[in-house]
Length: 360
Image (cartoon, rainbow, N blue to C red; front, side, top):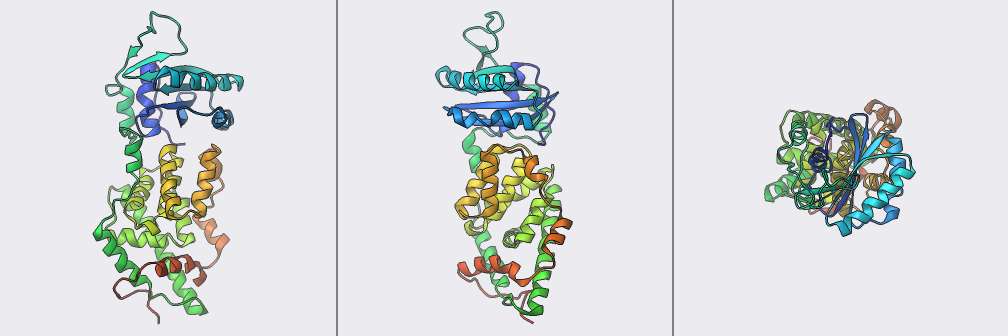
């Protein structure tokens, strides 16, 4: 996971880091941050109250990630946090994983379950200020964001496309409806050209967002439709790496695409967020994908991986490279465009326009 090296040397440092590690300022939550040496390797969060069986996979996950110690932080009143903190602490210690610190935070104060000294851990709690922490400044410098709450994170993946985007989508769809029907060498040749152009558009889009740019409405609509072709979508999946561009690109498309077109982009956002250790964002992206297409296989696969607390590396290591995708799938065939054709026939046709894929 690509989490920056935030040095956490005090309870205040931990509390300053957690919102950036989960992507928002948590409430009524239990957070476990796993550390290997000086580096935070992963962060997991549960809503409170949490069932003990939901924690059963935690120790195995921490071992897979070579975690040596953890910080446990509960947000909320003691009656809600203490039972959960006690349960997870017992599980971790039984699994041979050291709990370096266990905290409860509420109302700008924290209490330590690891300290029983009234001198450093008074009964009324210790005040803390995350905004002035050097850890928060380092997190921002590394590009991490802490939204005000979980609702803000959810809104960051909700649809924001308007009339202009709908008109652009209609124009692109009308253009693509001129594709020839499957069958014959000409259809395969045109499919090969469509796929090659789609792969190039994926790479150009990643480069554009890597440089701080953004697709216009027609470019976004076209790329969203390109992703209906599995080979194009898998190219985007295989390219995901540590760059912020992948989250930025696929979040932008998740928000702008028409509801029936969003499942591939939202699934790619989930994969990019999961790669970075942003599991809350990944989960919300999968909700968008599955709301659009409950049977979308990539989203189902990623949802199962998150539910079973798999490490992103376990799936990422199994992902073929673009060159291996070419070897495995062979030359493009017209049948590859069947999902796109199905998408085009489900929507009301827009005005006709010229097409690079026109029948010969």
